Image (cartoon, helix red, strand yellow):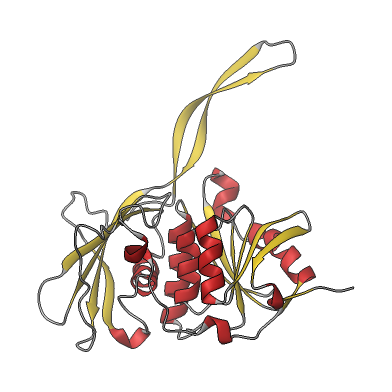
Length: 284
């Protein structure tokens, strides 16, 4: 199995106030990044490769299940017969393959050149050719979730998420996604070199734990709020997505259409609410 972190030799250079450099050779801890192939099939022999994503090894089955749910391939835990990490063709084995057996009632996913499922660690929808191809309708009515969260609780989430980022402390190179109750309690936190992978790991864990839809929860992410993260939150039935950085225009549009609360620039006690402000309770 690939490692979450590894050590590499670097040349560290520091320039002082006079412009003189100090050069030191030392070891640094880096974030692991390896490909994960997701194979899908029906009961019986043989699985078809569906996706390859660049990720930080760990929680790989949850990542695969979260990916399949947020892409609309599955919708509940009973849609999966088995999901297991297995050996690939590499020598030595890296166990960078997850085999998923779909239940007989689940239609097999359809792939075509317009919907390429290869993803990098920086983008969850890079290979998809159009808005119609990337937009997947949730089976959960997020707009009907009338839960609310106090603004002070929201303001505290970045620090609570940061406190759970143990690997980030060593590498400085991982995104995080945290699932919180509307009272601010930590439910699940996952880290990954890809922000979309971190979210899929959280969603996959919730799927296996029988928690979907995730009503009355807040998904907090360490980076920006992009279109695919809003979509993933909607597919999991999460009514609120909060991000430390900015959202995109398409992320705001999708949040408004889905009835999802979208909060950006959540840091230092301030925030912008871009959609669904009725869920954020302010005190006067």
